[in-house]
Length: 410
Image 1 (tube, rainbow, N blue to C red):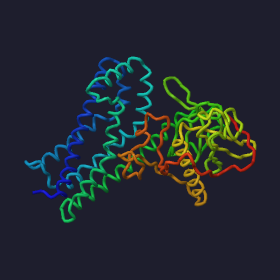
Image 2 (image 1 turned 180 degrees about the horizontal axis):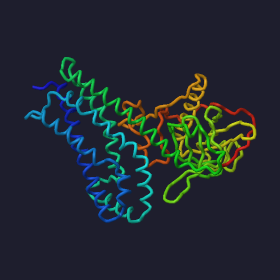
Image 3 (image 1 turned 60 degrees about the vertical axis):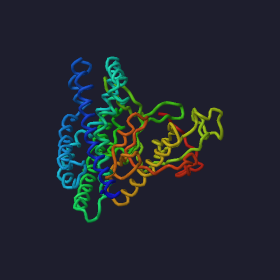
Image 4 (image 1 turned 180 degrees about the vertical axis):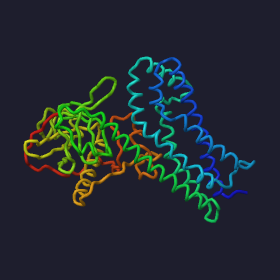
C-alpha cells in the first residue's frame, strides 16, 4: 500500500505526463485549426505564417518523445518508479526552444498588425467562438510552449519534494532541476537580447544627432510601454540599461516604428521625481489640487540638467501599479549605471521573467514577462520589487528640490 508521501509523488509524476499530452494536443491544434486553414484560404502568406508560428512544428516531436519515455516506464497499475534518469537524458533537447522564444516578439507584433485585416480578424473571431478554442485566442496557443518551458522547474521540484532521500531518483531529479534552470536562464538572456534588438531596429531618428551609443550598445530592454505626457499625448517610452528614450509610435509601411522627438536621456544623469496625485496640472503647470482628479493621477517626472540640452518630462502611467513599476525600473537602472561607472566597467543586466504562477522571480524559475502580459499596454522584462496594498502612498525620492524647471512636451 502506498504511503501518503508516495501518493503525492505519483500525482506529481502524473501531472508531468498529463501536461505533456495536453501540450502536444494544443500544438497540433494550433497547426491544424489555425496555420493550415489560413494558408489554404490565403488569409495570410506562407512567409507571414512562418514568422508567426516560428519553429512550433519542431517542438511537437520533442514532447512526443518525452511522453513516450514516461509511458514506457509506467507500471500496469499506473504508478512510476523512476523518472529522474529520463529527464536528465531528455531535458537538453529543450535548448531548441531558443529560436522559438527569441522569435516571439516579432511574431506577436506581426500577428497584431495582421489583425487589422478584416479577413484575418474574422477568421480568428470565428475560431475563438468555436468550442475547440476553449475561448483561447491564437496567441494563447502560440504562447503555450513558453509557459510549459517555465513550468518544468516547478514540476520537477514538486516530484523531488515527495521523493524520499534514499530513493534512486533523488540525485537524478536534482541534476535535472539544475539542467532546466540553466536552459531557462540561457534562453531568457537570448530572448531579452532579441527583444532589445527588435525595438532598436524600429527606432526612427529625425536627425543624426539623436543617435546615441548608449542605445546602440544596449543589449537589455529593462521595460517599455505607453505613457502620457502632461498634455495627454501618448508616448512609447523605452528604458534600456543605460538610457531612457521617449518616442511616438508611427506607422511606416506595414511596420509600427518609434520616432524620437527629443535626445535620449542617460540614466546615470537622470533626476527622478515621484509626483503626488493632483500635483500636476494638465497643460504643464504645478498645482496643489485640480478638479479633474482622474486625469492627473499617477504622474512622475524625469529630468536632465545639461546646459542648453536640459529636459524635463512629466509622465503619466495608466495606474498606480504601473507607475510604481516605472519608478522601480528607473531607480534600479540608475543605480546599476552609477555602480558601473564607479567600477569602470559596463553593467549588463540579465532581464528577469515571470514565473509560471505569475509571480516575479529569478531567471531560473521564470518566463518572458513581456509575453506573459503581451496584451497589456506596457511590457515588462525586468524584475521589480513587490508593491504593497498602499502603493499609492509611495515615498518620494530623487526630488528636484525647489528649483524651477521648464517642462518640454514630447
